[in-house]
Length: 198
Figure 1 (tube, rainbow, N blue to C red):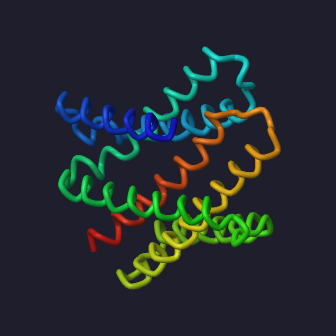
Figure 2: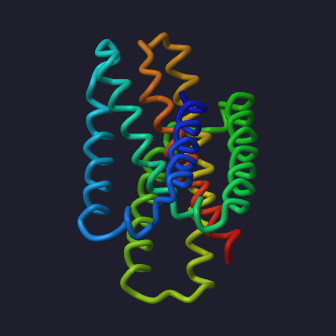
């Protein structure tokens, strides 16, 4: 599902690009807000719809990933070469972090969750402040570096959770498990992109 998610993102961006969709057509007026709210509604729905509702769950999943692909379209259309370069770098980082989590799960404590969540809230506040207060490039880079660290740890933490669930024979929800890792990788990609562009 993780690989499928990135495949849908790439297909979405490629389709938009081949259709010559302009950024101002997607990100202007209320349409941007609708995309954002739609993605939140779909994410919440995914979390609560049980796996046994196979068709509904997969329809929500595909719709959610397509909307995330639309959010990444500005990165893709601005510099395709950089987009693919950062994508490759993010993939290598993801593989390395996942291997570490599988090889040394004892290194990753269950207590990381609360600290990572607090860090995530802090990053969210910093990004909102960045929209309203003009940060210089150095402060923006520092936020991006911290974000890379936080989401790298999140990848290891979420991978450890998958390992624990598998060992405890918990009924798997493959979509929800993969969505967590996919969102970690999306955020890692975005911050790597911002650091590579500056």
